Image (cartoon, rainbow, N blue to C red; front, side, top):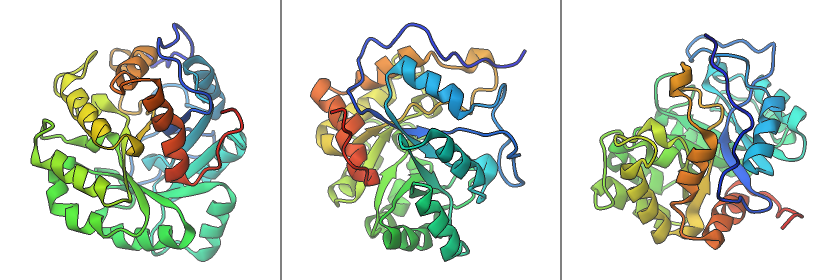
Length: 292
């Protein structure tokens, strides 16, 4: 049976603030097949910008960052098409490296791309071996970098990460696959990187690294609360729609419940406004919303 992504239903109990930005999602337009080296396109119906617009209305999202899916590797054509379809509510994070031409970088900037992606897990098109070259590109364009890797190894990368010239975000709750607590060395390293002044921390995709599981995700929740208390000005949030790891209906999360769980780790409405509006505006270089 084909996987069906619900796009409406019970609304989250937590009301998202006006101008809320979803900083982690993927969207796909017809006519852009998966490329060699990456994963397949998502299971089920193609998750299009039109579907995501329905999702935005359901959850209460006003603006969005579209992240290049690894199915398309270093070809950002689908990303540009999605940004064109979304219009001025959307910005993008693409995949580039030293082989990307200045003309292509100009094209991405004109399409509202404001970041570059490092993906150091299977299927990633630009991994940590390209960190410094991607940082140089991002710094030259005033872009940010979204960095995803197994945070179990963050101590091995801390020195290189601390030297980045660009603003950057540690994706997916740090993805500490080894399992960590707020006292773990990996979490202390994350706090040091945040204190360096260029690092943000993204609440997204909690189910990908939690060992305790839904609905509380208690292990990731403890770390998330600790980092949010340490640096409330450095937290951003993403829905991780359309949940590309879900290959069967039973694996697909309840988005309203997931939103309530993750945003509930922030202490109050003021903290949620920082995480969903103020912080992503700073990270991505987005002008303040007129709806605030």
